[in-house]
Structure formats: C-alpha cells, structure tokens
Image (cartoon, rainbow, N blue to C red):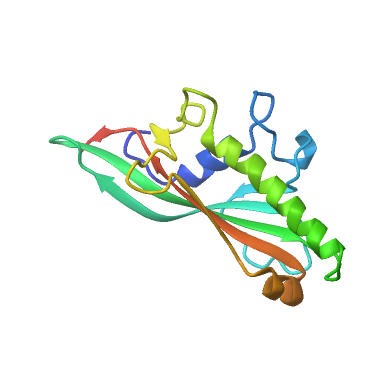
Length: 167
C-alpha cells in the first residue's frame, strides 16, 4: 500500500527467505545455513541455539524528492545469531569460519541479482545509498559472545528506499 511503512521488515524478511532463484538460499530447509529468517527480534531466545537472521529497522526517514511526493527510506538492521556448541579450539574457529561463510551468502542475497536492486519488486531500491557504504557488517567480539552465550553475533545494516507516494 502506498505510504504504508508498517510492513517493511516483513517484506525484507520475505526476500531473504526466498529460494529457487539464482541467488543463494539462506534457510536450512532450502539448503542454506540459517535455521530462522524472520521479521523482528523474538524477545527471549534463551536455549534456542538456532542460527537466525532477524530483520529489524533502525530508522524511517521521509525523503521528499518533489512537491507532494514522499519516498520513505529505512535503515534495515539484521540481527545475526550463530550458535557455537563448544567454546574450545578448534571448534570455535571452525564456527567463526562457518559464520563468515553464512554471512557471505546473506550479502549475495542482499546485493540481489545483476540489474535488479528492488528485492523482487518489494522496494524501489535496496543497498544503493551512494554516499554511504551500501552494506555494513559489524561483528560482536567473539571472545565475549562465545564465552557468555555460546554464540556469535553480528549486525548487518543497509538502506532500503520504498516506493514514492503522494502526501
């Protein structure tokens, strides 16, 4: 719906959960490495030990390209969680590499197919803000997260421009 920003996280989660196209499938059920791909952080995750991508957003900014037209822009933030079953070497190092490999597949899906930056028509464009890094990955310190929660964590952030609407 034009002008409705409330479903942006669900639209992006649907794109990330897509399979059967030339891009990498992310979910385990489709041959990918991630157990969960969903909109929004679920709250209490204690004891779940599932590799998850949780789609959230940090901001909504109304761009105003021309008179009486608005283009909502979101800062999408993916919360990534990767379980580490044993916090000892060499398993800890192996899981860090597995996490890096899973993030690489995620980045390929975010970048989208050649010539289409709309995430399957869900947005006007995604990860295309020229004055900033299109996609940024911020890793939590593995020494801390493995010891405290037996998991690795990262945040992936990028902008998505929604379709314009009249105000």
